[in-house]
Image (cartoon, rainbow, N blue to C red):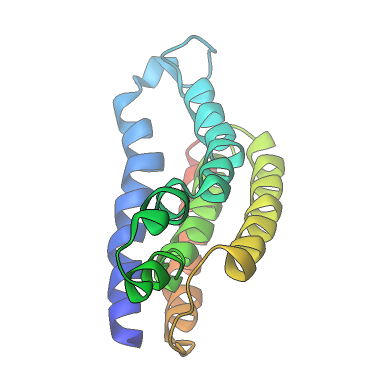
Length: 174
């Protein structure tokens, strides 16, 4: 289970880092880095951070699929076993949740020199994410088998250090 979670974490993290930070930087023309037009980089980063602050937690709390199962599918179940299956809760992965944290840190570090308010956004996002995940863990998500600390160790050893390197490089070339 630990190696599966670690593999999932690596794949999702690299995908999210490329989509949220690196591609935005690459598709923005060098002349439009700091101006403020709609195609420039600062409004794009601001939109990414605001969506992580508002849209993602709201969608996690709404948990549409679980509510459909509980309120639409469960009353129409033919057996008690089938109905109990609809009330199990949403399946989650530790690697996917840790990816969200790492992605926020990477975006804040990557654009921190150009957009210092990203650190305040990042702190707010992480605080909201903490409470949403805590609520989801207690009320929404299904029980999971015990998972070791391999994913967290891997993240701390490699991806957090890579985020700091990205911060240093982007700060020196900002």
